[in-house]
Length: 298
Image 1 (cartoon, rainbow, N blue to C red):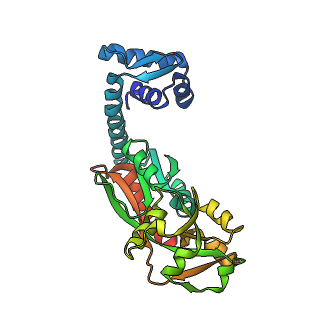
Image 2 (tube, rainbow, N blue to C red; image 1 turned 180 degrees about the vertical axis):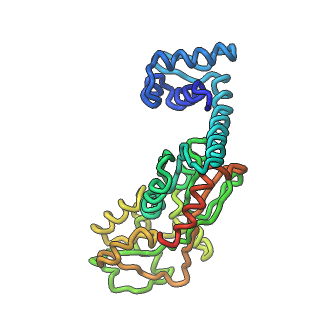
Image 3 (cartoon, rainbow, N blue to C red; image 1 turned 90 degrees about the horizontal axis):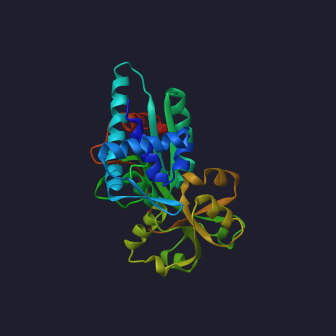
């Protein structure tokens, strides 16, 4: 039902390329050009400026893009609610999830969801918590799942699952003989941690702050951008890692890693659904209901 010209404009504006928009929407480049020209005629203004081989949004184009995203979201919500009258669930749902959730929590849930609702087109964007929240604010995704303790004031957070961070070492490490370490000992042990902006690192920093310990007080050898890269690093290192317990179940079962307790350091966190304020209906609401129904099996 939505004005296809707005979808064309949105694609060109995000890609800043008529060619990429043509490939994304599966229509010819002349058709892309025609739709943009029709919009420019309608609003009697240019939406793009050409700079050599590049195109840039004009001020009018930026304004249209801002409203365009909201309009397309409203069209999607209308389509969903109209289909509800016929007990149908169709449309597009763009999910975003921070790395740990995307890798270790969502896959079985997504498999069940698409089996239950085959008419829903589902996609997943993955990044650290900051990147995912930014994608939500920029309307590139419809619903987010993030980890960590930080909160953005313009976003709505709904608790989903509880998680715990644990300190782990490889079973060939010299720290293998320890079952528990103190906070003072933690400062001396070489660490490999997640990158800045990740929910995992945010939780660690918050937990340390309660004991007046800064991240700079620790012996951090390296920050890495994913849980899997940290696990591979630990297999070849004497370092200790701090990761979600959900991400290392297989390695603990196989005897590859060991968990070391850190005395007095509590590192629990929530995995939260995140939405823009006032946008809690449609397919995002359906997915949240579905996820809460199955979360005990995750």
